[in-house]
Image 1 (cartoon, rainbow, N blue to C red):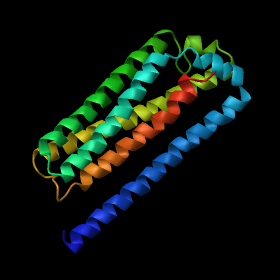
Image 2 (cartoon, rainbow, N blue to C red):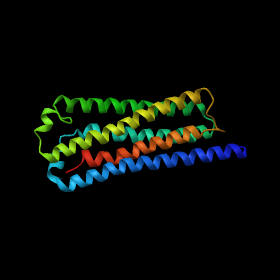
Image 3 (cartoon, one colour):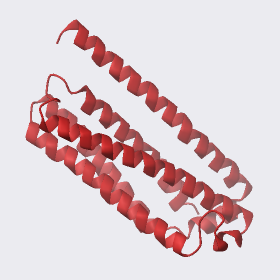
Image 4 (tube, rainbow, N blue to C red):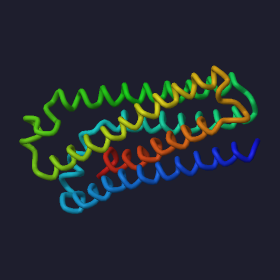
Length: 200
């Protein structure tokens, strides 16, 4: 690898880490806000959290954990020049993202169908703590869902680049950086799941 290519690789990695740091600040602010309201309304947060479907939450957790493993293995596969295996693993990660979004759509639809959404009729009848819980739930999971969509689209682009041999054993920084972004998506959900679905 040439010195110029090495510099480009290093700069791309550094840029991605800096970007991920700003993303952590964004979600960290939401988690701090959650902690403030939880301290103020512990019983109401527990009551509202009990209405979320733990099965959907657990299924999405398993999906994202499995997809993180798949994208990590894809990076290892491309380093060995295993193009077919890389395509399969990236494809599995994309499929996990799609299933995650379908699960989230079903879950959100059930809540919205019962009027549980910001300024919805059923929401406005709730005590203040439950309104705060569901408002934060929609903001946090909605923002996370947006990141899943962005990550999925990015991985589709990576898949196409691998298929066209633009990403290969000598130049795989785009796959590696996409994997880092996907790990962030997974990490954020690891916090969301217990905070919202397992609160007691």
